[in-house]
Image (cartoon, rainbow, N blue to C red; front, side, top):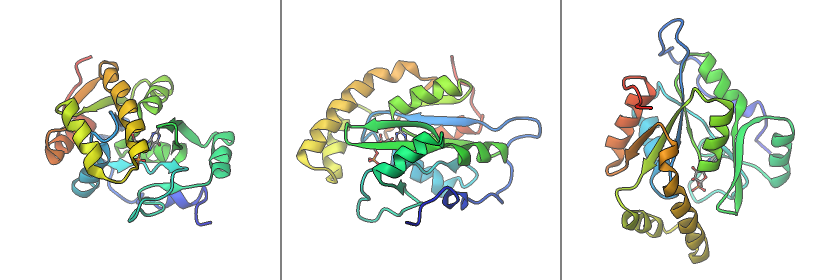
Length: 211
Ligand code: 5GP
């Protein structure tokens, strides 16, 4: 087993501080319906904005081809996930699409914020609600699809899930779309890079949300 509490200390703590002295850096939570492209937008930010720290979640789902332990997710067993919960190591966690559990390791988030780096969580709606309860000062961003038809097309087009899994994800997505008005900001993901740039402008505080 490669995974362990010390494994997620590998993030690069040497990066420059980005917030002004005396100004706490900000936690941003990105949520939105399944297949809207949250992961792709986060990947775009990872590529173009290394100053933004992006959380790596723990999950009980199996890796997809090409996914790397510690980079895309910490792939853990059900028992290991139970232990993370029991130790209070997760900032939030949820059973997503009624199939696998996903959670945000707490300590790396706290360390990134303490180091002055803006931090981004890309999580589901249930998780976003938990973070809102424990960290109400975070900025909550909803990533919306240009249309329901487009969302359906993206989910089918991804081709990584079985028919049954797709139907389950579509059902979740429909419920999740309704939740947009719980968020501080909505970004429509028409084009990935543009959505990523818009998100970064919120993350770095270049824009102030209408609340
Ligand atoms: P996927 O299996 O496609 O990588 O992700 C499925 C869903 O799990 C996505 O909606 C993603 O946002 C969500 N997710 C990923 N990591 C976390 C996490 O740490 N916590 C919660 N609550 N949801 C997560």
